[in-house]
Length: 248
Image (cartoon, rainbow, N blue to C red; front, top):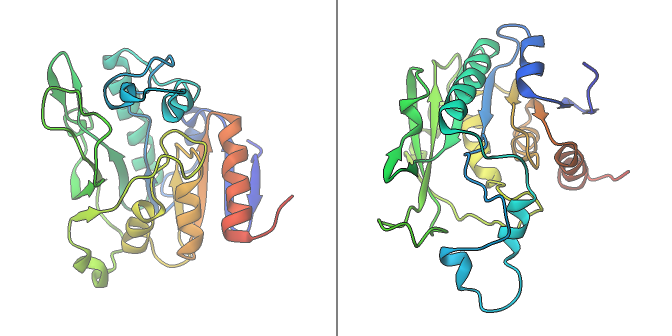
């Protein structure tokens, strides 16, 4: 498959990750760092909860999310699909597969990602987002997500163990036009910890390109795969402006 974008150790593929991943050889990347769709984005512009408390105007995030990308699968299908993707990432990765996800609630019960991602867990990190966007969920407002490192490391930087396992990092939905972009630091720390210098990082859900930006800031190479062409363009532009500092 011809790359959508390729420059200075960064490659972006525009396509379905389950079509692109099988074209990669086993063990051809060092690690995976990704934040997959959560199967939670709204499919219309009707706000609720904390979003519904705005008295005027259109809620910016709700509008962005409703037009973001397809993120509404039957739950059983979603779980099987994501497990398949993570298994493919494990096949092509020499080391760890880092997945950023969260507990979601269906039919009044929590659905924990590790219940449907049946892979050995090497490490768990709790991301304290320092706030919640769901204050109407009839339970303690969720203010955390997590990163699970599946598999075994082929390289580990012991000097970063002092980071501890709870990371208080604020979440900013307005840093770019992607509805669910995560902080660069969330990708940067796993890369520095478990990918050797000059190594190759994979992200099968590229989004706005955060993992690729983090990889270049850490002097690593990276491959990103993205289904939506508008996000491929966003990621390429972001790399040029924030990392390579040149524009088209």
